[in-house]
Picture 1 (cartoon, rainbow, N blue to C red):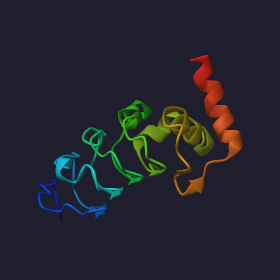
Picture 2: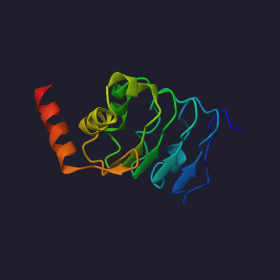
Picture 3: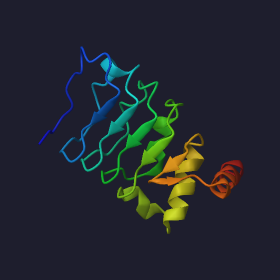
Picture 4: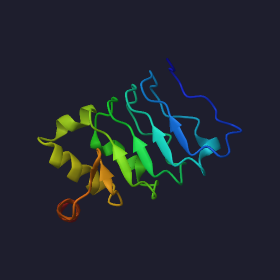
Amino acid sequence: MIDRMVSLAGMTELRILSLGRNNIKKIEKLEDVASTLQQLWISYNQIATLDGLACLTNLTTLFCSHNQIKSFSELDKLKANEQLRDVLFVGNPMYSEVATKEEARIEILRRLPNLKKIDGGFVKPSEIEAAAQQTSTD
């Protein structure tokens, strides 16, 4: 079982990195694949923050379910990842901040409005509208 991320120097063509079902606590050392990595699969780890992802300029997919992310505010760290379209966060403690799965989807979309899929389901026009309304009242 892997407990930390190591340098990926020399992996200049890496597009998908799968590190799910390990004991990783911190996202780090991705600078060497910052321009090529498109998908990062890190579900079922011990990750508590989303630090270390801003450098991934071409990241389109982030599977980060069943980790230790406690607050939706962590998602604000993904604003720099403008290509991000598909995320998976279900199973993180932050879901206890909201009453329903639908509310969680709206909160995620409010923070990351470019998403097309959240937790395996396509974003609906009604969700886009609800997220936009919440954002305008903040």
